[in-house]
Each structure stands twice: as C-alpha cells, then as structure tokens.
Length: 548
Figure 1 (cartoon, helix red, strand yellow):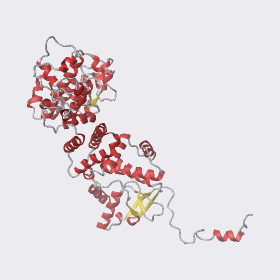
Figure 2 (figure 1 turned 180 degrees about the vertical axis):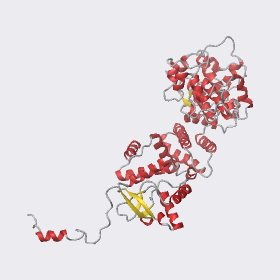
Figure 3 (figure 1 turned 135 degrees about the vertical axis):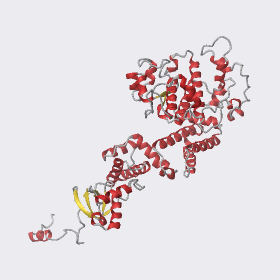
Figure 4 (figure 1 turned 90 degrees about the vertical axis):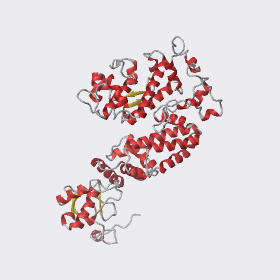
C-alpha cells in the first residue's frame, strides 16, 4: 500500500528548510565544476605532497629573482582541491614558485607576493594530478632521472590502487597515454629497473646522478651474470643470485666505480662457481655482448689438441695479463680431470692443424711460422666463438674511445658491424680528424674495413649482393650515406680514411693516440679476424656470411 501523500503545506515547509536533509547546519563550500580564475592567498594553497621532484630545483635562485623583479607570477598558478579538503593544492607543477612566493612574502611583506592569481581545475583523480606534475617536469626538463623513475613508480602504484588490480607493462603504458603522458617501452623498462631494483641497493650513487647509459649498462651486466648463474646452478637458484648480486652492488654505494664492481663480481662468482676467473670473464663478456661462448672446458676435452683453454686476451680492461701469458697454464677445471697437456715446441705442428686440414686448404709443406703464432693464442676455434671474441674486442676498443654506439653485433661475417658515430668528428679542411678525433677517426676506419663493410679499394660492397644484404639495415646511420654517395657520403661525418703514412704516428707517437689496452686489443682483433678468415679458406669466400 502506497504511503500517505504529503500536503501542499508540508511540501512548502520542506522546500523552505535550509540545507534540506542535513541537520548539521552549514554545508562545506562547493567547489566549482569547471575551470575558472580565482584570487587566493598563500594560506589557502599548499604544495603538492606527492611531488615527483625530490631535489631542489637547480634554477631556484634564478626563478626567485625573476619573480621578485616581476613582483609576482606572470602566469596563474594551476590549483585543484581534493574532495573534503579545505585548502587548495598545486595541480600541475608550480611547487617551486609557491615556495618562492612564501619566501618573498616573509622577506618583504608585500601584497603582490601574498595574493595569487590562480586557475582552478576541478578534481579528477590522484593519478591525474601526479601525471600532471610528471608531464610539467618533463616539459621543463628540470627533473632528474631518479626523480622521474620514482615518480613513474608511484604513478603505477596509484593507477593499480584505483583500478583494483595489478597492471602489466603494456597496460601501464596504455594508461599513461590515456592521461597524456607518452613514454617509450624502453624508458619504462629502464625506470622500473632503476626504481624497483637499483634504488634500494645504491640510493646514494643514484642521487649523485648516474645517467641513462649507466643504468642500461648495470642492467646488461646483471642480465649477463644471471644467464651465467643459471647455466651453472639452474634457474631455481635465481633468488640466491639476486641476493649475491645485490649485496655486491650495495657494498659500493658509498664509492661507485664500474671496474671495481666488475672485479668484485668476477671474484665472487668465480669462487661460487669454481671456475677459473679468466674463463668466467670470457663467458660473461660473451653473454654481455650478445654472443654465447661454447664451454671452453668441453671444447678442449672433446678435441685432442694441445691448446690450453685459459685465455686472458678478451678479459675486461682491468686485467693486467699480456697476450700469451696463459698458454702454458691449464685451467683449474681440467687440472683435476686431465693430465697437463704436453707442451709442444713452437715449430711442431699442432693436432688442431691436422684436424682442420680437411676443412681448409693447406699450403705445401709445414705451416709457416706466422700461422703458428696465430694458432698458439687461440682458445675455442669454432666460428661462433671467434665471432664472439671479435665483438668483445671491438666493444672494448670503442668503449675506451667513446665509440661504443658504433658497434653492432651480427651472427655472420666477422661478428660485428660498424655504424656512423652519433656525433660527427672534428675534422680539418683536408678531411682528417683534429686532436683526439684524429685517433678516433683512425680507429673507426680500421674497424670499418675489418668488419668487411667496404672492400679493399674503399668502395661500398654492392647493395644487391648477399653480404651487404645481410649486414646493412635501413635503421643504421651509415645506410643512407653509403647508398647515396658511397664513401664520400660517410666522410661528411667521419672524414677521410687515415693515409697510410700517418698510421705509425697514430699508433706510436700521437700523444692523444691509442692507450696500451686499445693498442693490444686492436692487434688481437686483427689477428682473430685473420684466423676467422683462414678458417673458411679463400679470403673472398662467402661461406663466412652464410646464415645456415
């Protein structure tokens, strides 16, 4: 049965009652439902309590003097208000300006710094405000890498809280795009690694300002050591790896040095795995640069030659061992399972030579002395291992000379390609490098020739042939200049090839020339490329470039 219908007098009384339905009296002031201009005092605005910027704005003093000279802000401050709050809050950037206004008011008591023209924006969500601050900081280019990473980490947590579920990386990127903040997948991966993995371990180092390439390098190192760990102990021991790697990083938070960290990692993992440190370094370096070395011990035990597996040529720069020092010492792994290999005189042919004689043409008579010099420094002699060594050596050389962005790995040919540097060399009017760039120019052209992108006459291999098709890709910086103008197109960035008569100067007497490690590695690279070429026979043979 329906309730009794109210009379006209009862309806009139209800309509005339203040704050209908609220016995508490006054209602809180209603916020505007659209964007509008307001004049507010300093007491009515508070800074954003989740501001992504944690450090003081590096331009703080400059901004303060500008506001002082203009006697206030020249653009309104964007504000909003959380539901239920009495104070307005900075909505999209502006925390620095609000703090400066407070300082100027305290110093001068001038009204122009106390009353503020603001633009009110209706409240949308917590994630919206946090995103607005991230976008504003990004546009101004004033936020550190660490602050940006922690800001994105907080934003992901906030979006997950609002959605009531965890977000995959792709879903997180889609949500960012929806709210107007476009970030590449590579950036998201980098920021997540920085905030979730590195910040708890090395906060001081990060606050002191590691750059993007440093973060990427640490991540690549961890991935390489993790792959090595899984090969040795299995993926079910991943948690132990995380603890061991994290402990080593955290020990260096007060004084960061990449070489010291790598040395400590090598020592620790060599002890845990029982592997000779030189073998460990070679295998981790191969993993680090995208190529998997075959196990040196298995390679040696499966063959009957007398070559020794310990090889110090391709260890990181901190190693002080010289070429050939380790050829008379068996590895620790083999010393307990095999008798020491019989040392053969330098003039005696090796068993590996006899084994490979069926695979490559041999000159009449015994191998000459130069060939034996190359062989006595070799470790694993399969094509994959030789290419991995080439890549490692090329990267070590270029990293020391600020050219590492030029090296690209490839699974055929010599194991690496050479691209144009990101920044052109400083070149004189004759086309040759000036100062330090003279050495870098010599290195670049030497590596370009070594990887066989150009032929002996210095011209581009025809783009229609198999070798160029396997090596050259359109996203490479070198592709279009080579395709359009050949070597002359490349010379606009790197200058002309170093004349033969200047090479001794670059190698021996240029005070800004090659350091000793780079000089040694360059010789080893040329030697290893020669061995790789000899392994397949004819120097012009395309078998080195076969993909099958």
